Image (tube, rainbow, N blue to C red; front, side, top):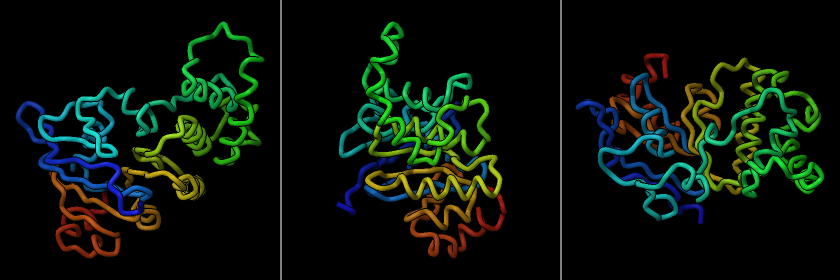
Length: 251
């Protein structure tokens, strides 16, 4: 159902030595949407992401994924449930080939990641899946290249491919376009639009042009609290948002 809430937080808060980095955040992400989390520096975006992916424990509140309370669930278990933060499983091994990187990620899904004594032929069955993933991120022609040789934008595409190898229902993308030039930005933005099929994406992103183009819904944070929420056309005209964020020229 398009209107189904796949991820929800209730009164989510995080304090660090008395400082409230996140305060009373009630977030709802609809299944099948691209939902962006934006705000000025220090707004609490990264803290919220770390809470959602279970790298931080909330001081208060709940996190629900597909209606299940995952507030106390370990990061690896959250990933197994279908919600994956890109860097959780997408480490690129520079001196392995692009194909080998994706195949390792597919092994993780099968639970055979550390069975290094298995023969190479036993992994041949993963080739078709790996090729399909590489084709999806336009890297099939680079399959035999070492990952370390890839330009930055293509390396990020490889990271997304290794994330997709776990077949997640929901992706948390933390600044997927950071440090990219114009050509790479266009390529990865197109990739995000492509991989949203049958998936939900929540992303923190500083590039407002991309946020405006990709996002179905935007949540604006300021000083750890939700300042505004809605489609870009609505939040971009909100006077409070313009004062706290859009008028500053920073994310």
